[in-house]
Image (cartoon, rainbow, N blue to C red):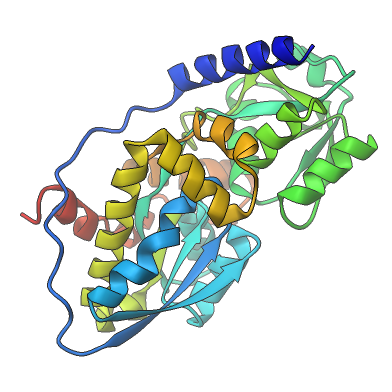
Length: 334
């Protein structure tokens, strides 16, 4: 039984990898010189696997005269709120957060780069049969309303002309552990979540990936898993420190993307989960952002269409995605 489960998981992971968005190779600029005077950056982080490069940035930045003050958040939405209030300088947020805050009239959020891409499959409780999109009818599906994965799901349903009310949405608050517990208790039939909680459920035999229910590649939202963002204030007053943060992050990201075992080890330390969970999980994630201004504009238009945001900001949202620092660093500093 154990061998058959492992064989099934391997087959699923191979299929998921084939769907991941390819990330072009780049030549990272040489390490920047230390700042002439120490400067503090307050950085908000969320413990999800695709942000594992965060693990080593404090030590790297210390050499560059950038002092890191770290603040942990459970959800992207909490980090977004902290950025908008100015209580942190840089944070990891959802890839669709720019149009959301802009529609609210707030311009204090500047997107810097995406972080990773992945295919997304509905995770279904063992014993429940969901083989195709028609099978979600009447099922209780756990969602985190307003989350990045929820946006991916809603956009995919719209593109497939599947009524949102065809299933029963069960709102679940908190981190991924709450989804795992709800599935195990039988409160829900399936869930939309993120790694490593998806692989944790599948690896334990409590659920399975519904291989035909892929919702991570809609045209409107795309396969991006997250976004690094800064406050507009930090971009004006601490730009050199922000540049060094991005170099440190890209440096760590590059190293982990080339070494799956190192990625799994860093992932394990970062989120506090065993290697038998993180090793299969890293096979699903391709480090390196795929987000760009065009995708953000598409998201803004779709969010307004779905009624998520009251105002269509697609014509202006691109002004608040500044990937110039990342592009310069990824082209050797030119």
